[in-house]
Length: 152
Image (tube, rainbow, N blue to C red; front, side, top):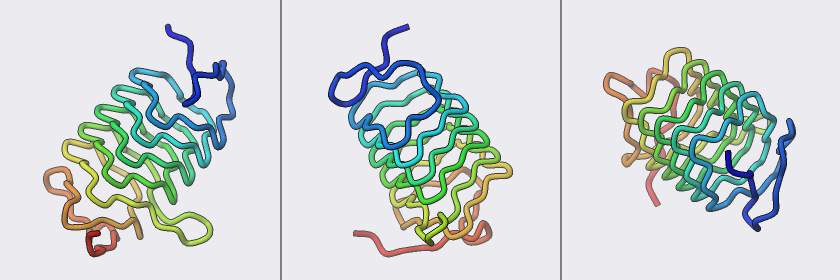
């Protein structure tokens, strides 16, 4: 397994707490972060294809334009996260909380790709989306309490 490094190339080691870490534009394919605390972490433009984020605390994390194809996010906390333009095709979101955070910030899903995602038991109340957001077959954002916002 390759050594995990942050955006600046510094090794981060194996730890439980990754709060606020900067993984902007880092190759994180198939990395196992299961159960880690990563509140406010920055994963913008990162490739997290096939990564395991099951049970992670990703409160307020930034995944702007991140690639989360087939990632396991089952039972994770994504409250108040920025998932705008994220490609989450085929990701496992079962039991994941994507509702507002404690200060009322909505999870951002504008132009996100959720095609093929597993969403049973996921909480989407007050998460925002736009006309460019792609949903799994049969998913109704209004029934799931999501809020439509204007693009751009």
